[in-house]
Image (cartoon, rainbow, N blue to C red; front, side, top):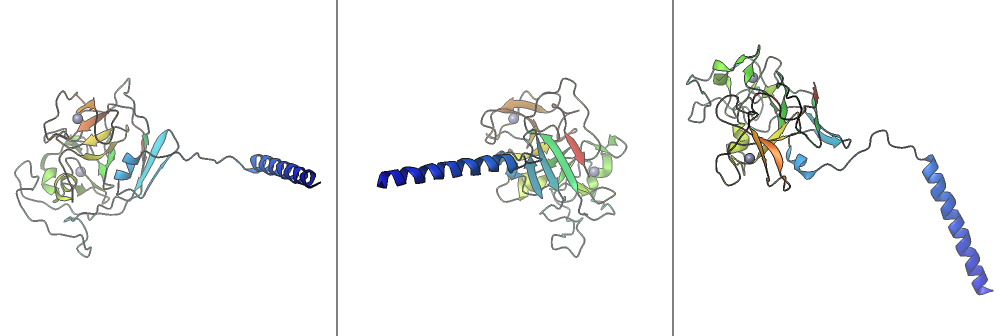
Length: 259
Ligand SMILES: [Zn+2]
Ligand SMILES: [Zn+2]
């Protein structure tokens, strides 16, 4: 009697569980966008306002508000710092600092970069405007000033972090982001600095053993293991001369940027 009652209870439970799990499967709509685990390396982009992935692309949003001092913050901002000429002035042309008229202004920038970047069969030129993002959320621009001309005297408008804002106040780096390679706590000349739109990472002017990178291709990159990519990856190295951040064009197929 006792065992029969027990058998009955177990059966009722099993039937109830089956009905419950079936109805749950049938009634739950599939999510409209699959959220996928994001490789931890992307969390190094500390300046991003959000980082998500659909399994094919990593979507990085930034308001482009660097956490470092600049002569381009409004002088009411706690990060405002008057420009002081010094040996770190990136005035490659030897000129004095000339402040551009605009302050740093919050932006709405969304970069969609390939989660698994691949070499492109046809290499496209980097665009004017946003071509990538640095760890502090600041966009990388290519080696040209507006109109596709050489940066020329524009470098004399770079602040202490070697960046400057364009006409709508979008702060950006054309060259080595000096705050990230030199000033920030723990900064190195060899660490990860950000990503370009094709999904490939950007590193500083040195390798992890502090030597100069060797065998760089025309895009300023090569492939080997790094701390962030223990299986090895193609990556760009920033240089001190034009074209600075990468070479002429993307190694991979670029994603998209909206702003
Ligand atoms: Zn510029
Ligand atoms: Zn390297």
